[in-house]
Figure 1 (cartoon, rainbow, N blue to C red):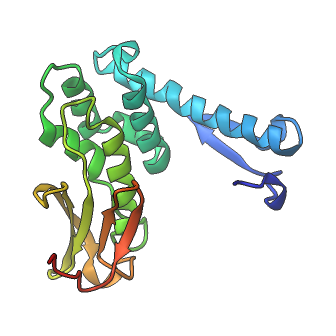
Figure 2: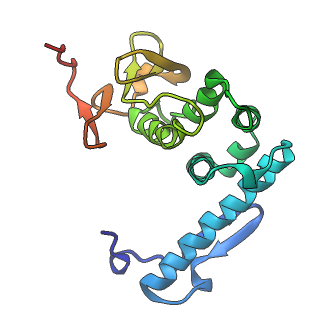
Figure 3: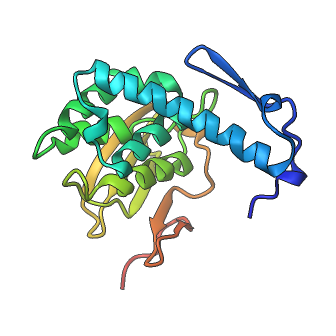
Length: 205
């Protein structure tokens, strides 16, 4: 339901791979906004392909959902994520018949912090969505709950499956006092929609 007419994007731009993509380079109106966004995403995809192939893997052999998840993570976190140690390890694992899930979790689920703030389950949820889009492709398990543990000095983000088995946890370097969400838990409902759970989370009957 995005209405481009309500947002002035005339001066918008995005630097990707050393190239500045300007909104002003595209036609006026909503069609131009769509072309600008598509160009930015395609530029991220080009960088992703370069980094995957520099790691010795074949981008073209990856499934469409996996490519989308890689591009989405890099677009949200920053293009430097494509060349990170964790992502390079993930590229190698995804080429295997039975990928190491711990390595994939580390690559796709770790970044859940704001630049100048605390950790956030809203970002953990985005990471979970990216993971869930490829879980079936890489022999993994879907995430249906993310919870922040703020009992210590720094926030620990935890990811669980539908049976409340812990799949992965991330010890962040962000102070628990700067936690960014009102509630500490978000769950995925049967309709595929995430929702915040009031504190404390009600016990199952």
